[in-house]
Amino acid sequence: LLERLLKCWQFDTKINEFNSFDLSLLLIAFARSALRDEERLSTIGGALRQKLSNMESSTAAGSLYALALLDFGSDGTGATLSSTVLPRLLGEASQQELVNIAFALV
Image 1: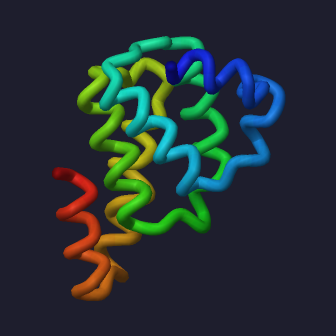
Image 2: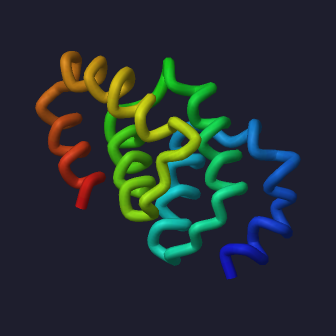
Image 3: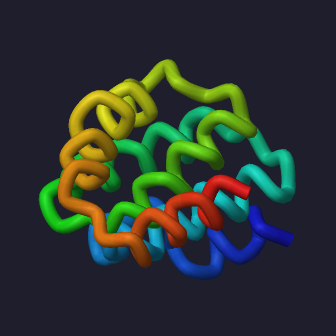
């Protein structure tokens, strides 16, 4: 079903129109359906890496969690999230954001 939806959405041509939250949700959908399509995951990861500057902490945590579930790290998205985005966001995070991060990792 997920693959059919991606074809209907013209995923490959419209990926840069998605915001970081939508991209994170796509990664989570791949993880929950155990769909390890490395080409599409790399495409999503590339688009996500372009939107790091305005990413919310829970979005970054959810994306990292999805990548871990899929055991996918070859494109560098997980490393980038864990080395740049999450440390920056954790240092600035409010108590509510820390709670959101915890829920994103469950």
